Image (cartoon, rainbow over all chains, first blue to last red; front, top):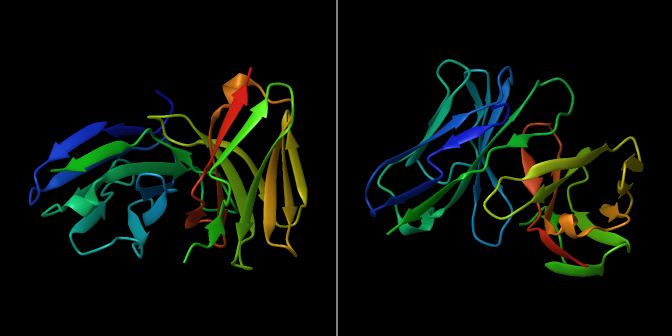
Length: 115
Length: 111
């Protein structure tokens, strides 16, 4: 497919478990972003990669959240010792370049539910 | 502190009429603005954008207006169609990297 792909689409975990969410950006897109969207809210920025470099992680809510993009393509968002407040939709987006302004293209998200 | 605000959670419009969705922002450093459309269980889909050097951008039935002095932008859809029923998010950026989103406006176009 040509779009941003996220997996799994749904994830249910017990409080305290670790989870890993995957994002396949559009091929050739340099920039990759992770967002968290709570119910009834807009997406909130978590972190940003330019190729394999994580240039901004100011939105990560705690040190339990960790993101990587080791080869500059696929990215994984990991949440350790999950808590109920981590329940949300996690969106990944990619954009073509870092030159000028580019729209971000979103995947369909992973809906995470922590029991 | 919400830097981008959409004060109308919902809007209903008759098919064929104009839909006007509004967005306000507080950060004067924002220079790129976008509108996204979102259907349930899907990710946001890019609709239209505008740079701060312009005050209007048009794409088919969709027009975005930017009033920098008022820190306000709006999305006009004309004529509105039932398929336009979705949640619309505005977003803004100063750096091109971190985007700030509003809370969304749910548009219902009544046939």
